[in-house]
Amino acid sequence: MRGYLTVAPQCPVCQEELHHHRADDGPAWLTMLIVGHIMAPLLHIGFVQFRPEPMVLASVFMVGSVALALYLLPRLKGMIVGFQWAKGMGGFGAPD
Image (tube, rainbow, N blue to C red; front, top):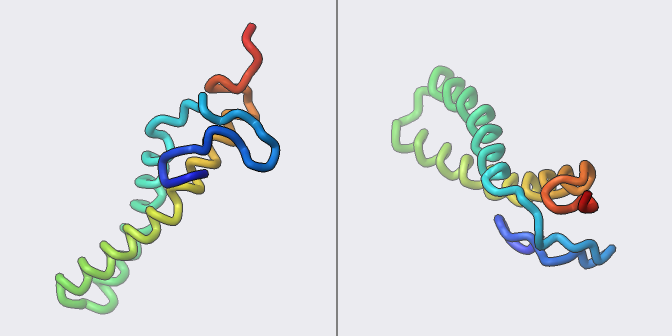
Protein backbone atom coordinates (compact mmCIF):
# COMPACT_ATOMS: atom_id res chain seq x y z
CA MET A 1 0.00 0.00 0.00
CA ARG A 2 1.28 3.41 -0.85
CA GLY A 3 -0.86 5.51 1.47
CA TYR A 4 -3.97 5.48 3.54
CA LEU A 5 -6.37 5.22 0.63
CA THR A 6 -4.23 4.76 -2.45
CA VAL A 7 -2.96 1.41 -3.62
CA ALA A 8 0.33 0.97 -5.45
CA PRO A 9 -0.13 0.31 -9.18
CA GLN A 10 1.49 -3.12 -8.78
CA CYS A 11 2.88 -5.34 -6.05
CA PRO A 12 6.63 -4.76 -5.58
CA VAL A 13 7.15 -8.45 -4.74
CA CYS A 14 5.08 -10.45 -7.25
CA GLN A 15 4.35 -7.70 -9.83
CA GLU A 16 0.57 -8.32 -9.61
CA GLU A 17 -1.36 -5.43 -11.19
CA LEU A 18 -3.39 -3.61 -8.51
CA HIS A 19 -4.45 -0.44 -10.33
CA HIS A 20 -7.95 -1.77 -11.15
CA HIS A 21 -9.16 -2.63 -7.63
CA ARG A 22 -12.67 -1.58 -6.54
CA ALA A 23 -12.47 -1.18 -2.76
CA ASP A 24 -14.20 2.25 -2.85
CA ASP A 25 -15.57 3.17 0.60
CA GLY A 26 -15.31 -0.30 2.12
CA PRO A 27 -12.09 0.26 4.10
CA ALA A 28 -13.29 3.59 5.50
CA TRP A 29 -16.64 2.07 6.48
CA LEU A 30 -14.98 -0.91 8.17
CA THR A 31 -12.56 1.40 9.98
CA MET A 32 -15.38 3.52 11.38
CA LEU A 33 -17.30 0.40 12.37
CA ILE A 34 -14.36 -1.15 14.23
CA VAL A 35 -13.18 2.08 15.87
CA GLY A 36 -16.72 2.86 17.00
CA HIS A 37 -17.24 -0.59 18.47
CA ILE A 38 -13.95 -0.40 20.35
CA MET A 39 -14.06 3.19 21.55
CA ALA A 40 -17.74 3.48 22.54
CA PRO A 41 -17.58 0.90 25.35
CA LEU A 42 -14.22 2.27 26.47
CA LEU A 43 -15.70 5.76 26.58
CA HIS A 44 -18.57 4.53 28.72
CA ILE A 45 -16.28 2.61 31.08
CA GLY A 46 -13.88 5.54 31.35
CA PHE A 47 -16.68 7.94 32.17
CA VAL A 48 -18.40 5.69 34.71
CA GLN A 49 -15.25 4.49 36.48
CA PHE A 50 -13.09 7.62 36.56
CA ARG A 51 -15.41 10.63 36.02
CA PRO A 52 -12.76 12.80 34.32
CA GLU A 53 -13.37 16.35 33.18
CA PRO A 54 -15.32 16.43 29.91
CA MET A 55 -12.50 18.09 27.95
CA VAL A 56 -9.96 15.56 29.23
CA LEU A 57 -12.24 12.68 28.29
CA ALA A 58 -12.95 14.15 24.85
CA SER A 59 -9.27 14.88 24.19
CA VAL A 60 -8.09 11.42 25.19
CA PHE A 61 -10.73 9.62 23.17
CA MET A 62 -10.33 11.85 20.12
CA VAL A 63 -6.60 11.15 20.03
CA GLY A 64 -7.24 7.44 20.60
CA SER A 65 -9.89 7.29 17.87
CA VAL A 66 -7.73 9.07 15.32
CA ALA A 67 -4.69 6.93 16.15
CA LEU A 68 -6.69 3.70 15.89
CA ALA A 69 -8.29 4.82 12.62
CA LEU A 70 -4.92 5.75 11.10
CA TYR A 71 -3.52 2.38 12.17
CA LEU A 72 -6.43 0.32 10.83
CA LEU A 73 -7.23 2.10 7.56
CA PRO A 74 -4.29 0.90 5.40
CA ARG A 75 -4.54 -2.61 6.84
CA LEU A 76 -8.24 -2.85 6.06
CA LYS A 77 -7.59 -1.46 2.58
CA GLY A 78 -5.05 -4.24 2.04
CA MET A 79 -7.47 -6.79 3.43
CA ILE A 80 -10.23 -5.76 1.03
CA VAL A 81 -7.91 -5.66 -2.00
CA GLY A 82 -6.51 -9.07 -0.98
CA PHE A 83 -10.01 -10.48 -0.58
CA GLN A 84 -10.94 -9.18 -4.03
CA TRP A 85 -7.81 -10.75 -5.48
CA ALA A 86 -8.51 -14.10 -3.78
CA LYS A 87 -12.12 -14.20 -5.02
CA GLY A 88 -11.39 -12.81 -8.51
CA MET A 89 -13.53 -9.71 -7.89
CA GLY A 90 -13.08 -6.07 -8.82
CA GLY A 91 -11.18 -6.63 -12.05
CA PHE A 92 -8.82 -9.30 -10.72
CA GLY A 93 -10.57 -12.25 -12.33
CA ALA A 94 -10.14 -13.39 -15.90
CA PRO A 95 -12.77 -11.92 -18.25
CA ASP A 96 -15.51 -14.37 -19.22
